[in-house]
Length: 243
Image 1 (cartoon, rainbow, N blue to C red):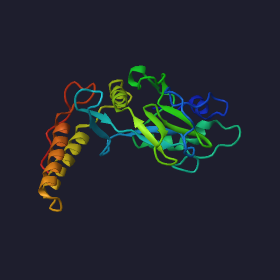
Image 2 (cartoon, rainbow, N blue to C red):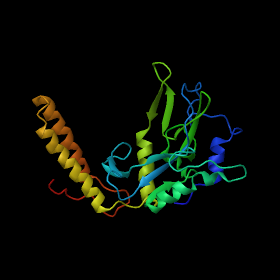
Image 3 (cartoon, rainbow, N blue to C red):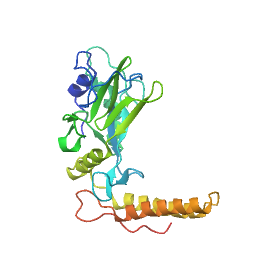
Image 4 (cartoon, rainbow, N blue to C red):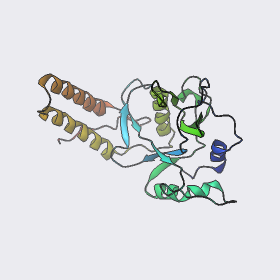
């Protein structure tokens, strides 16, 4: 994917932009946390742990790409400060280039999310949203609903997993993120199988607790073995090799 446009980032950080909101939810008082940095969502292709199986919002176990936030904060992770007159895109040009050279998919800040893949009440727009907080802006994804926690100056994040999963599936079916390799999926299944054996050998747990852990590990391994890939002609999951 190309480097994100300057326009979307400027709009997200401009002092004269519209008042921050909870991404379409009913506006709430300012969050009791310090400002954070905006971020890209990045998928690191071909790596272990780059795909996971989910069911919420999908109806059946489905392989989905793991997306990680990459902060746009000068001085961190290769992001630099820009001087007066420089385009803001210079801030992140180098780290985005390096990520792409490694084969990572960097989702542009202005990548629009289809309304059917957003939580109810959240307006159409990009995946990066903002809320008003103490001293500035708190950035979060369109699927998170940050709100004041019960205790002290804390924030709780309510995550709409169903719509987030549907969006991740669409990233694959639309070709934004390529299909995973059979090797990556097979390795994930091997790790799941090893967890079953690890749970069975865990002598530190009482018998009942150990059986419960074994059951959970087996259920996860079965889920991975039967999961399908969005848009694939047939299931990409293969039988896991013996650990």
